Image (cartoon, rainbow, N blue to C red; front, side, top):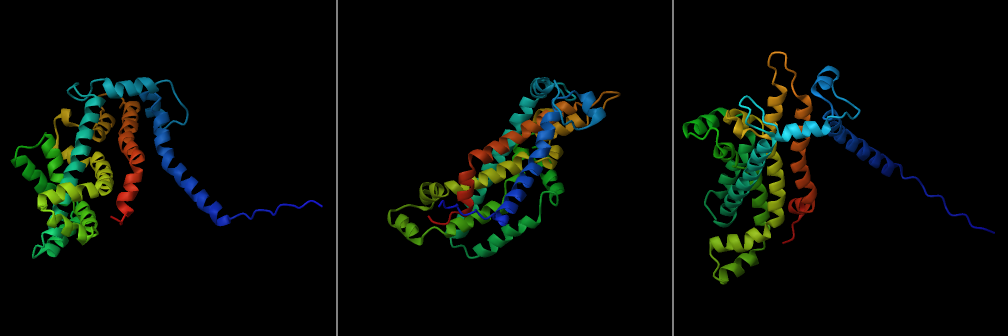
Length: 289
């Protein structure tokens, strides 16, 4: 007499969860995929027929022109220069925010200032004042300092970060007090304690904040548009818009090149998140020091 194996019950909750995840992934991947496919067509086809669902024969040509062909009103800017400007803005934005946030959090947690808690909440309330709210005074200050059309003007007004200060403050408060006492007994001063102990302990948090701030800085459009009129300082996001708005007489905008630049603009943030995702998760969830 043969025994029949018991039938496995279908876990409908698991099926529904995976179905939602798959549909969500398709919904997120569909726009980049359609942009990539459409970038393989010439500007006339895209302008006449819109987004395409089948591959054309202009993919390599559009990417080559987008990255290496001089364009713009001055005919001196290409995608490579705009990519470099975006990298400088993204990295400078992230590094500046990390440095300022760590120093502010360190002072609030360890210096025992009389109004440290009040100072922290005053910093935290700046989250209610996004760039769009303070855009006019920020622009006025940069213009009077003569920092328009400079990397300093692009980066410095954006680096103060209440979000980074909050995360680093919470992280520093979780550092055991015994470690602080041991460093004090060993003769470590404030600077040595910060550089030799807190910074190494904060590696995962630094990585997590760097990813968040790099992506935020990379995608900046309003501030670079306002502060730069020299095309040599245009970022990729600004360059894409410039190509789409290039109506002159009967000329058709180079939609294929704009979509190619859009695909290239997606790659650095995606690659950074993929390669550093473990550090990103640890930095935001790890609590044991």
